[in-house]
Every structure is written in structure tokens, then in C-alpha cells.
Amino acid sequence: DIVLDQCPFCVQDTVRDGAYLFCKNVDCDERLVKLLIKQVQFSQEFLGLKGISERTVRKLYNLGVSNFYDLLTTELKSGSSEEDSLGPSMTVKLNTLVSEIKSKEWTLGVAFRLMQVEDFGRSTSGKFDKWVPRNTQESLFDNGVMVTEELPNTISTFFGSQSGINSKVEGRLMEYLDTVGMSILSILTINPVVLDEKAEALPKFIVTGSLNGMTKKEFSSSLSGKAVEVTSMSQADYL
Image 1 (tube, one colour):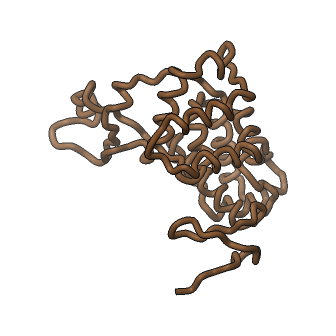
Image 2 (cartoon, rainbow, N blue to C red):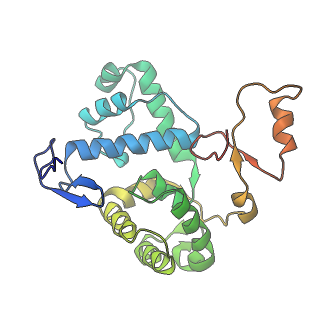
């Protein structure tokens, strides 16, 4: 077996985590651009958008958009050098994505998924969003505004109350928040909503193609109360 002691992109040391090797250099360009690619891909899927490719994100990175906060605070203007590099159509798609992200109300759990912290997936996100309103509503939110000073303690208490979650996830999340994550949260609209547990537990589906003797709307209506129709593949249980 070939073991890479150094990252092939930045030539810095690597570290093993289970079956995987990771570059230890937090400033490694390839590590940063791959994270940005994952964040853009998740954002598109969650919001039901498409069209922004890995190649486009790499172009963005080369233009100086080095992280997700940079993306959310960069307005790509018509006639700019960025538009010349990306093209008018792609510039519109990127601006639309940023606008949709900023205008949406996010729960904290989904906002953390947006950051694409390793192993903070859908299950952990859902548990967090159900746990927070019941346990920290008064301390973490003041008239609907998040009290950021309380967030680290809230996260630590949550992970301490859970079993079956990778113990390293808390450290990864806190590390990302310490670097750029808190700046991202300052831009997003965080809504401390209490989720409807019954609706959350229902299976989620997407309807495609055609049905014999029934329209898509009629089919969706027939499953009312039994399942929830969604528009994003990342949210769906059934297709």
C-alpha cells in the first residue's frame, strides 16, 4: 500500500483519520477549494437550484473567493473582471444562489450542514434542531436574535447529551466556527423554530415522470398526512 506522508498539493504533513488521510495544513488550497465545492453543491441541492459546477467554483477560488463567507459577501457585477472570467449566465446563477441563501430562514442545525463540517450530516442536524428549542431557547436567543457568546456552550452541552455521534464532530464544528463559521452565521437569518416532529418523521418524496390515470398533483394529494413532498434530492427519502 502507498501511504502519503505529505499532501500532494501543498507538500505538508498528512494525518490519518480511520481509513482516510487528511492534509494538516489549514491553508492548503486544494483542501479549501474542495470544502467550498461541497458547500456550493449542498446549497444548490437544498435550495432546489442547479448549474454551478465544480469547475466554476475553482474559477471563483482563483479569483479570490477562498471560502463560503467570501462567496456570501461578494457581489459579482455585470462588466466586472469576474464576469469576464465566469461568463454572464454563470454570474447570474452565482448571484441568485447567494441571494437565496441570504433570504432564507435557517435553523442552526441546517446552517451547520451548510458549512459542510465533516460528519455533521442530516441526522445530527435534525437532532440538534429538535434539542435546541427545548433546552436553550431562552439563553441562546434574545427576542429571536442569536446570542453568539452562548453558542459554544450550547454546542458542547448538546454533544455531551448525545450518544452515537462521532466524538470528533464537535471539535471540527468548533474549529470551523472559530475560523470563518461565526462570520457566516452573522450573515444568515437564524430562526429558532420548534420543528413539527410528526411532519419531520414522515417520509419525504419527489415525484418525477408520468403516472397512469393520475396527475402528479393528485398523487401528491393522495399521500397527504402520510408523506411530505420536497423539491430537493438531498431532502428526499424516495423518488
